[in-house]
Amino acid sequence: MVGYLVLENGDVFKGERIGSNNDVAFELVFNTEMFGYMEVFTDPSYFGQGLLMTYPLIGNYGVIPEDFESEKIWAEAIFVNEFVENGNNFRAKCGLDKFLKNSNIPGLKGVNTEEIAKVLKECGTLKGYLTSEINNIEEILEKIKKYKIEKPIDKVTCRTKLVFGKTKPKQIALIDYGVKHNIVNSLLKRNVGVTVYPAGTSAETILTVRPSGIVLSNGPGNPKEYDTQIEVIKKLCKTNIPILGIGLGHQLLAIAMGAKTEKLKYGHRGNYPIKNLKKDKVNITSQNHGYCVSKNSIDLEIAEIVHINLEDETIEGLKYKNKNIVSVQFQPEACPGPEDANYIFDEFVNGFYKNIDEDGNIKLLKTVPNIEDKQSLKDIMQAINVPYMSKDEKHIADWKEIGYELIRDNKRKLYNSLQHGKY
Image 1: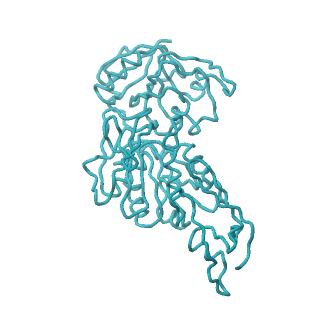
Image 2: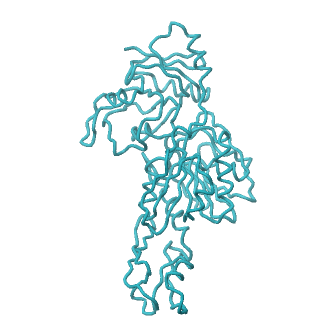
Image 3: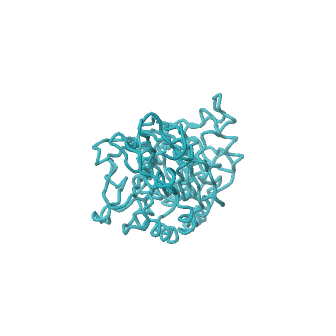
């Protein structure tokens, strides 16, 4: 069946329909990833958008649920050049066309994705409409004009609190604005528990549980629309709890700290080089955002610019002075990849610990504290927040018999409890 992509500027592109046959309006964006299309399709940050894939071959390895970044496809429509209905892969559960039909997601194949991407680069992000009939263009253009994405995090956030790794010694509070699964997985791999809270959760609710750290997740939409979430973040920033902002969380955090955001002409969706100004090192990162923090709005007395995008010099990372708060615009969880920026999670988790040496390892006590009759080793350990090494330095004591695990450059160092009792 023939289908048409109609853009708000009047351009019309012809293709063959895939997926479901329903007509739909959207904001059209393009992604330049060369692999990982299922991770891209299931990213909640694409809510309300039509997704143009510039890589020419999509669907060749089918649908692999283990690679999903959420429970469903959030994009309104998919546009590709060459499309493989039934991909071949031993992990695949079905073909992409069947999955699109079952998910009620329409799309077009055989469209000139290169030409459409050039239009978006020249004109900026455009609204569009996917339809099988173009007899009345004026009516279609009127539907496009009326389309608007409003506060999408209300649609993509979790409905109830979710708890993972509740027995871990360190617990993270993650506010879900449209979080990707691998952000949660990346934290769990670093031996911390994660409690995921809905986007509308109050600061008081989060602070009551006294988390070791707070993560503000990625998500869709214009950050300026989220007044309630910004007020919550302002309260969280008044504490001494370490905070990590990612994507939309980075933008909301910047607004809460007095900066402003602006819309990019056509966004960053794909792989982009960023430079860490402190380390003088370049990483290739995975990105998906249509807004950025305005460089001229940053008060350098409050925040330090740590990362910049090497293509357009937009801000990609900030560190707030006199606070344990950092944020990044890119996606350090790296799904679909590359994994250059995984160290962001290492640095964040390491920040929970006091007395970290230059190699990122916990410094161990060399002497035995003077413990009073009514004071336990547990109390001292909680106060200093590090494992305790006894006089002979042959074992590490932990009153709760908790194994401490700290990651440094993806290598785990496990501190096992070998003895408990008073010293």
